[in-house]
Image 1 (cartoon, helix red, strand yellow):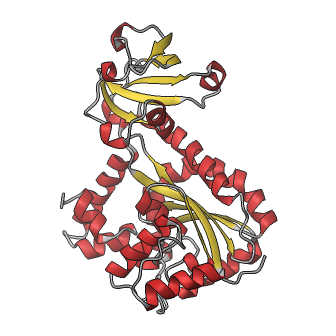
Image 2: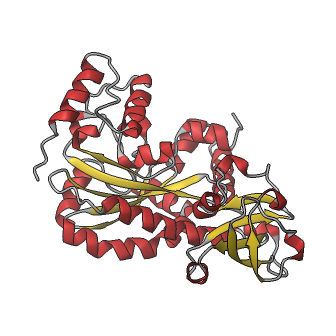
Image 3: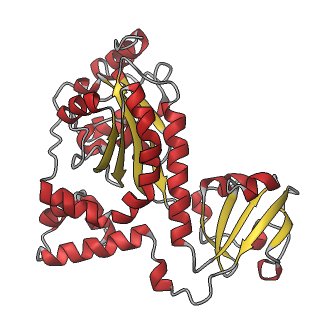
Length: 347
C-alpha cells in the first residue's frame, strides 16, 4: 500500500475545502465533524501549523504533574513498544490537552516524527494541530483513526495515526494513547491495539480512584467477571457516581446518568443488603454475576482524589506562582488557557 491519499478522500477535501460542501457520504462522520470544528476556529488547511514544543524545563514540570498518568500508562507503552518497532511506528502517551508526555517505538521513524512535532513536549490538540488522531479522539471521547488526507492540515498527510482517549471514572478524558506511522504503512490493527491498551490504563486509574466508594463489578459471564473484564459501577451510598465504559454499556446508560441514577434504578435489589458475591437482575430482566467491593476500612477521602482533582490543584498552585497570569501559568503547565479557565476559574 502506498501513502497516496485515496481518490475518495481527495474528492471529499475538494468538496469541503474548495467548494464549502459537506461530503458526508465520502468521509467518516468523526473526521467531518473535526474538519468543521477546525474550520470554525479559522484554521487554514493549506498552512503549516505551528506546534511549538515545551522547553526541557517546562516538559520536566509537565511530566512531574502527570506522574500518575505516566506510571499507570508505562506498562502499556512497554507492551506496545515491540509492536511499534516491528511495524515502523511510534506510540505516544498524552495528557488531556494532547501534550505528548512519553514516546516509544521505531527509532528511525521517531526521528522523522520528531521533525513533525510528534515528540514529548508538543501539543496535538485540534486547536493547534487540526484534525489528528490524538486531538480528535480527545474531542470525540472515543477511539479514532486518521489516515493521510483525513488530517486537516495538508502537511500532516504523510501520517497514519490511531488514538484512544483515556477516561477517568467520571468519563472525563485525562489523556490519550496513540500509535502513529507513515501513511504508507497504515497497520490495520492499530485502532484495536490502542483501544485495548487505553482500557487497561483506565482500569488502573479506576482502581486508584475509587477505594473510598462501593464498587459493583458485574458481567453475565462469571469467567469474564473473575478475569477482571466485567463492567464496574461506583456508588456513593446508592447513588451512581462513577463507572467504566463496559459497565455503562451493560446497563444501557451513558456518562450523563452519573449523579442522577440510584442503584434501584438499575437493578432489582438493595445495594446495602447485597453480599460480596451475588447474582443480580437488572430492571430489564438481565441476570449478572456480581462482586460487591465495599470501601476499604480507614480509607481517607483525601487520599482518594481523582486524577482530575489532583491536576486541578497543580493548576491552582501554578496560577498562584505566576501571580494570576493565566497565559504564563498555561505555558508552564503545558495546557491551553481555556483549560485553566474551566478547571481553576470555573468559566
